[in-house]
Image 1 (tube, rainbow, N blue to C red):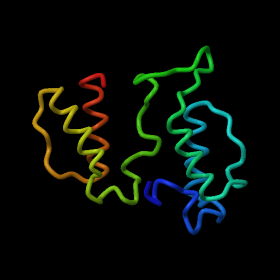
Image 2 (cartoon, rainbow, N blue to C red):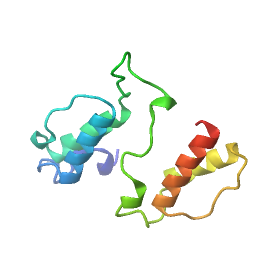
Image 3 (cartoon, rainbow, N blue to C red):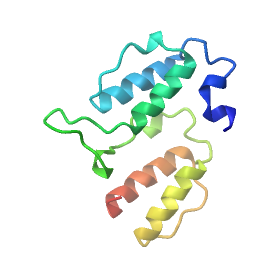
Length: 131
């Protein structure tokens, strides 16, 4: 396992969480209606683990049982137009997702895209394909 995938091995893992980590934890918990303790009490390593845990957790429906499956996945938590890295080249995961959904939608697979454009295309294709 690489060090990137193992936050407990980070040299800064015992440092306090970053403001971005704390904000992301709060945003994820809120978007999924999940309770969360104050993220300031975590280390960077623990905050990273909490983010992964919240990403994988099903959204809680306040009117009944937990929402699960693709319908529980909503739009991006943050507006892609505000991403500071939005102009950077789209990730491999983004382009892979776009390619699969474009084929399902009967569209040609777009060439190189930025992260923001790829995110917007993913949302557009989700609506067309129901994925």
